Structures are given as structure tokens and as C-alpha cells.
Image 1 (tube, protein in one colour):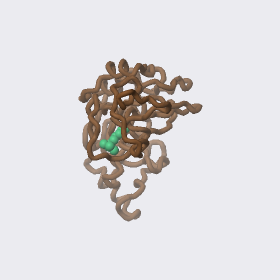
Image 2: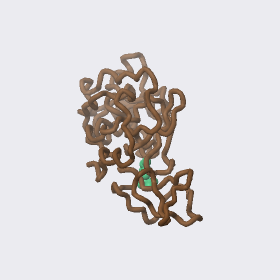
Image 3: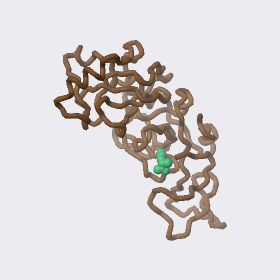
Image 4: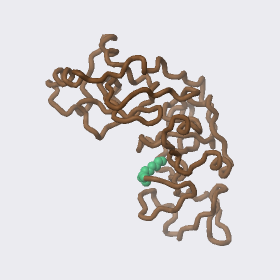
Length: 266
Ligand code: MLZ
């Protein structure tokens, strides 16, 4: 479900272009997701990346898995692409001479980890090796992004969301991901080969739910005020100008949201 958002219309209305596929470290066709909720696998602990832990698939969204580390709480779920190198079949760690570790913030006493591990794996449904993808796609040889290009990106503050975004700046191997319609509140720098950024159209291919852009307006630096007191925003519908006191208001929750031309959630 894509809400009422259409990239085709939006690109036209904003006079912008999509970042071409060769900019991204993503496979041309999104990787097939054959995982099922409840399956267990090995994953790097995102809060302690040198540890390999047991994780359970607690949800599926497009080509991504929502994972929860066994022995952790339900407040630290994380999302991984099915072709991520950070997930492996159970047995892989030991095969490579490693030892499975308790997650950071293990609920029980550290001394109970060996028994916990036995119990959590006993009778568990282990994700079969054949549904893992052999390799992560290769990184493009350099940063091919250009400022102004559109893309789809994981909102790192709400990582279940993938949202329309624009390249805001370039800094060597890094790209500033700016989220359309959110006044910078969710923006971040990432490497050009990050697995959190996708070409336009990715979500419609995977069936992931692409969020519509926000409706928070960035006022242009040089006044774009029109005669009727409204402000023209980057070729989109004029939005009513705010009284001076409210300009540049910090992003945050507003009780009544501005109606957006593309619909919105959350
Ligand atoms: N509804 C929530 C989430 C916003 C998500 C923005 N993503 C770029 C909020 O308004 O904070």
C-alpha cells in the first residue's frame, strides 16, 4: 500500500530526478524474502557489533526482517535486508570458531547464558541456509550521488519507515539524506554505500510501505512571499504563511496536522 503517494507525480511537481540505480548498494531486483515469523538465525548485535547473537524474526516487511535478539527486550528491535551480511544461518558462528554471545542488556544473570542458549535453540525453527543470500551486492566504486536527487531511505529514528528523501549535500564518501517535508528533523549523513538507502520505486517492488512526504514546510532563504500572503514552496502548492512568531518553529508534534497533498500517517 503506497498511500496516495505517486513518485511519478511528485517528481514532476517538484521538478526533480531520481538518483539512478548505479548510485546504490542494492540489488537491481530486490532480494526475495522467504523468511517466516518465528524463525531463528544469527545476527550481529547492533549495539555491540563484535558479538554474534541469536535473533528471532518477529516481522517481515518487503525485503527486510524485523529482528529481536533472544534474551533481549522488545524495545530494541532492528531491521535487516534479507541479503545483509549481518545475518547468518544458525551454526555459522561456531563453524568459524566463534562463540554465540548474550545480547547487550541480557535480561538474566550472565552465568545463566549457556543454559538460556540451549533452551532458546531447543526445538526452535531455524531459518534454513538456502533462504539466505550468498552475498551482499557490491558497493558502487565511488559516490555517484548528486545534490537534489530523490531516493527512498530508512528513517533511522523510526526504522520501520522508508520515506521519500532528497540528497541534501555530499561530503566525500558521505551523503546527507534529507526527508521531504520534515524540516530536517530526521536527516542524517550516511556512506554512499549504506544499505539504508534505496532507488525510487524500491518499496513498490518489495511491497514495503513507502511513507508519504511530511507536510512541514521549509521556508525559502530569500523570501518567497506572494502578494496574497502565501508562500510558494519549490513549485508545489502555495502554503499559507505563518504569523512571524511561528516562523522557524522547531519540528515537533502539532495537534492539528496540515493537510498534505499526498496523505500522511503517524
Ligand atoms: N508520526 C511520527 C513519525 C514521523 C516519521 C518521519 N519520517 C521522516 C512523528 O510525527 O514524529
